[in-house]
Length: 264
Image (cartoon, rainbow, N blue to C red; front, top):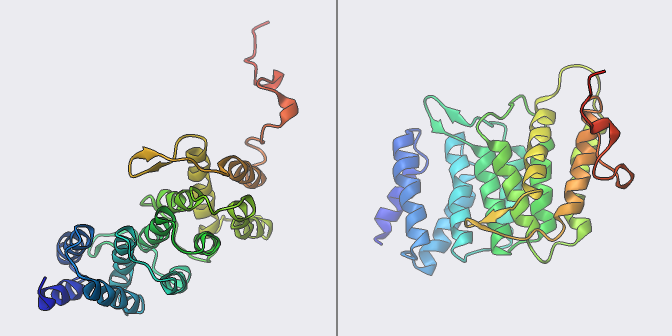
């Protein structure tokens, strides 16, 4: 591909026009990476450009950079420093809009999660660092309550990391410490946006771990899915103690409390 054309696509990836940025530039770049149409030097240049883009002054430009990095990871490119750079941006990103009526899809939370999920699926990067970044994004103070399935995208990224064989049980559960600390520090009153986002993300992950997590449309094992699910249930029970409680071994498969009431 001519260098001028590649540079033009990268420039357009920062456009505030969603038709230019999303429909044209990102779609073309992702296709070029996926189809192997870029040489090694071009892919290396593209990665550097995307890492620099994380410091752009406009959120729509920042938010699309990790999507391109995710495509590169899925195609077989990876440098350990990418995780550190994306984490620095991801945890601190203040603009968490999903879809904007003017800018179109911004989706910083979802796009950043896609990068970490791609690393998880590809088996690259330190899994503890990947999970920690996602856990920190959950609890970072914000005024934005997610509305465009950011919770599902983040939960999916966590699940993909958890499918890796190099994740031991301590690592699989450890990232939940951030959520536990946030819930423990809560006080009566309105629920902070980050707490609401965390609750919904954990519920999404809990459901997925009780079903079949998919990778490329096919079911994949989650080695420590059950202890993670139990830990999530414990966390969520603490914030809704009036609603339900985790089942224990002594409860058995059925409980008198669960039996329907019979008329006299």
